[in-house]
Length: 141
Image (cartoon, rainbow, N blue to C red; front, side):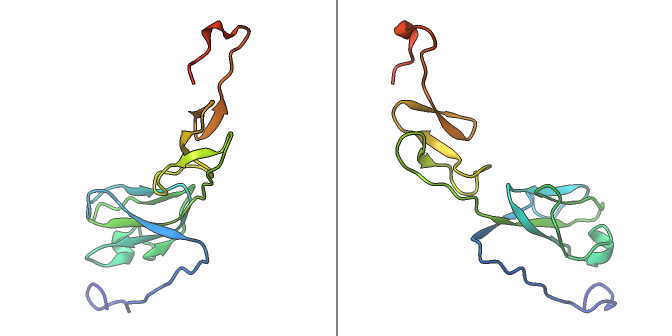
């Protein structure tokens, strides 16, 4: 039971066949607006030392993310956690990634850390170098 023994403690599992990882809100237990962000949040949890319903915005301890953000605003100390799906990344030749960003840093499918010769990272993917109208000013490859 929690708080003044008013509620039963319950557990909830989030099951998926996808690979996941967890992200904890920075700074541990804090009051005010707390948010945890990841590219593909699939579930959120709110943890507090006191009664969850009162200190996690009147909500349950497990809730759905909104636009990839797990957020609670109550003034009581709490921690907000996200369960995030790992965004895939494939390497290969040509315009494929030479190396991928660490899975915790990926913001899109095939988020490249580096590219193959003749390509450069533009945003999250690899683009071919081009010379425009004249090759006298081409970027060295």
